[in-house]
Image (cartoon, rainbow, N blue to C red; front, side):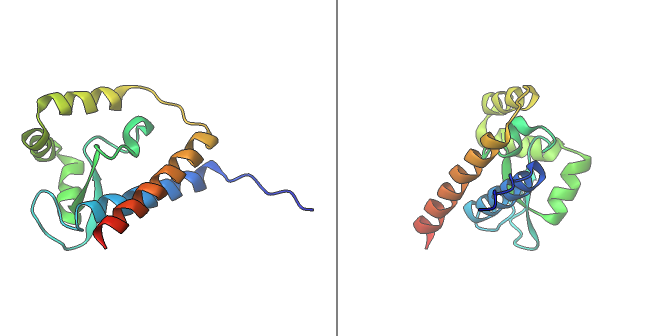
Length: 129
């Protein structure tokens, strides 16, 4: 019997990015939270996706149209302001603290997180449809 090859980290990250992005766009009805556009919905991070500590954090991601997401990648002020106006300065600071903290995920952690997100996505889908 052939042994199963372990899933590569890069594959796990891509799968997580896909399911979390799909979840966020569905949760926000494929509508940009800033301008209301439904044109080219994307997943915008309040704090950069470079940090794994908040990359897949559902409080760090919202649906944005391509234009708003592109603008905020060069100037965060409007997106930060939107977040603070909607959720408050304390929530913003809590998210920022999580963002600057260091988190190291093992491949097993990423697999578990993926399974959890698939479950959440299905629950959201069931509640909508």
